[in-house]
Image (cartoon, rainbow, N blue to C red; front, side, top):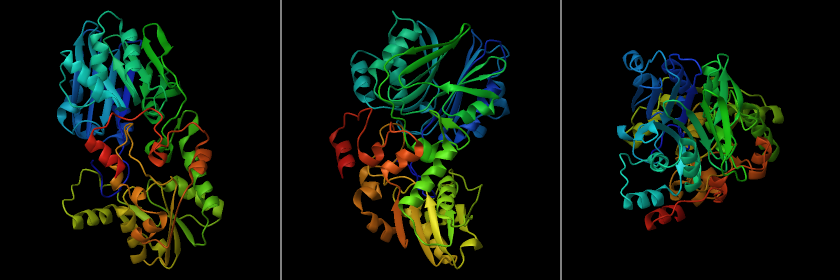
Length: 472
């Protein structure tokens, strides 16, 4: 697994985006804006497909949106009469970080050229892929998204909507996808709604599909609604259509509200920023401590720190400065370099000098960065550091599109809370309870597999090596 040593967070998933315009127009620029708004969901690769009903232009590469789509490459995607486009920002949870795994994926079928962009993981993709290989199917990539595309393509006797619905019934896991033909935009979400997908519309009638509302706002669209768990939607010249394929008990990923989603929106009717504040308030009620100042780990702990300060009455202040130019592309080859990278990204302010500090963050994965941040505060003169975490301890890996770690690398799976406290050097350490988290988010139907080991959408068929990594 790949980690960013300067954050030690569960890695972002992927972001998907799609447009259907009833009037021909240049969609490349709007797609670029939508992907830029979703950049936080994946920084390894970016791509888009655009069609005007005849031409089907595709471009993708490794890198950030602004790196992949310079002016020259964006010009190559500008079809003046375009009607359909999709885009993708990628973090490689399944399949190596190689150019041929960048999305959207495309293929030629009896239904014409199709393009697919996918967020999440199919837990039975290995099995289905093996069966298809035995039947003579060809695969050009190592990611599980191509399994979905092949399932849709091989149903030559069905129309595109029927074939997509059939593929949804064959694959299990947490996923949200956008699919395009030359004349249609299609979106679909897994039966449990683990991964998010929202619908928006611009004033000119253009329909938008995106992983988060922030991408809708970036292109001047309003939020219409979320795609429901197990729902298949499509847009064409006759408007928006819907088919419920296989809905089950909704269990959206709790980490969307804890960390992943941008705070300027809502998912499944729950405001993200407000929920993070409620997490902090709940954490203060559950785990109070005497202190002088509440400090967030920027940017992931800001909402919860605000809530903790409000509920406790202890002043909120920015005790850590985050360098906005210390990005994820910096490579740190040694342990010393990795530690210096944390200092390059975060530095303490004078607000912590001589203070008893409550340090608030959203999660602890391996504990290495948490220890370094505690040390930074002590070196800056903090007399006490009390660490508070707005998620329960992460004890199990995720199979639904979040790159956490093998279980043996998750510090909470091998250490007690007191042992973690000693490891990171804090005076006290406390996590929000799972019931408290559910209360803060405002719904009982949540996926908390990484806290409990209970996987609502199933688990992969594991080989011996995988089982060992999961169980150790």
